Length: 256
Image (cartoon, rainbow, N blue to C red; front, top):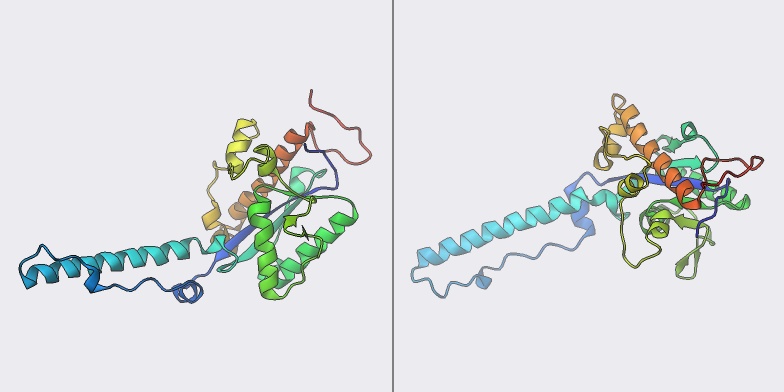
């Protein structure tokens, strides 16, 4: 199902969301307005009771609206429409863990995306593939959408009609045997395969962007981002039946 190729590249993106509620509210449809006439007061006898019930319903509606927009803001980083790419990580299949890198292009997203597509073209010229975890469901569509939004050309061979080209390997799909709508976390897969985990660290995905921008916490964020790459590559090797990363001129050592 999965064949090792030393020219394959493990990749992973980290994102951040919009910081203002005003921007979020410009993107999404308005929340339904409160309609006092919709409050059922038929069993209430006095006007005071009716007014109290309507006011309670109004406050509940306001709380639900606030929660709605808070959730949109919290999840802004997960949507290309309301987020942006902060870093793109790379690790060649045949490179040591220490070779993992995070590119931020000095926080210039346009330049970051152009670099990514250049790396893609270079890898394809070497007959390598881009390998990730849930990458066909999240990373690649996110990169394509952000490129469209910012006017960065997307190579025409990324998709074949409605389908993602075979040079994009999503290890989550490989692990689930391409089961329909089956979703497994990278950390869970790494644990069950005995390859370590990503939870025993201070930084997490929701905090990555803020920590990465903070010089005092940059090292912890970088460790988080690079661990995603090394764990993904470890799963890649395991599923390909390869004991360790090998270069083209080395003999392939298969797991027995």
